[in-house]
Image 1: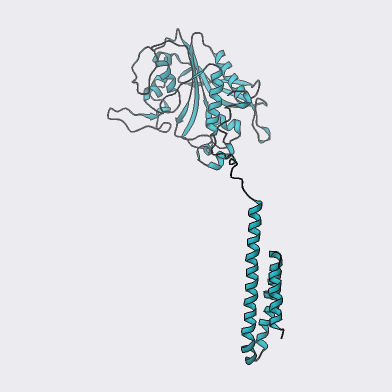
Image 2: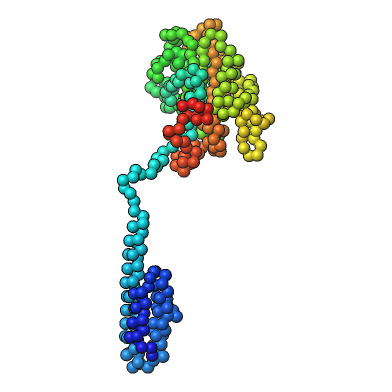
Length: 370
């Protein structure tokens, strides 16, 4: 039988002399591991006589406990030394200012809207706004919608319950009612009688805002954003409309000479009406504006219908105008490579951190706007 006192002295001395945790762990395995020296002594108890086990069992178990205690105490001391060294090497200078943290982002829709406003502002457009909750006159009747037009039906429009007088308010289906309010000089609560505006044109406004329709898929949502433009003056013609839209598209997509075409279309509030397509290339899984042989529809436009001018107290023999409308969210999808419109309204902070913009950036740095 190994001299237990001598073995204990050697193991406790080795534990006290261990210079790091790795050496201490090696000692623990050599003494207390499955093949360790102390573990071997414990295994030998089975081969002893009862009298020998009664004598040696307590001595060997005591040896094991004292060696384990020595190893544990040394480990505690080494951990304390390591922590002290780390605290000394990682000292923080609390006098320094904290690192800047990005706390928020500008939503792509708001970024695109700011870019559009900045571009049109340089063309001399002012910004006009109106209520989200509209009446039938401003949303439909004044804009020359026939009484049975499909847009008046429930499958397109969010209607409120009828009022006691039978009137049904609605969530505006486009920002065009603000065109009516601008030409008529109506405020948000004005009734719908015919009258002459208190001041004559010219009018040159853009109208950004939220709109609502019963539609939802990859490129449609029940709530979305539009930006319309309206110009009323003497001698206004389609050539000016074409220049305005082509100039805007070139500035917005930061591409010179974007090819455009205007296809005949129908809108109740413009005559003639057109849809604007721009040149693009869809090859290679990317959309490139201003090159290629494909076409992409981006806007509706036309000359303001004479009936709309009359509904606003303007003589169509004296005043002419043009109007146009863009989907703000869709322009953002095209410019910044956003694949699904619904993600823009999902309130996912991870999505916004990827597609969002710094609140301190200019609306369109590449164009030099601020």
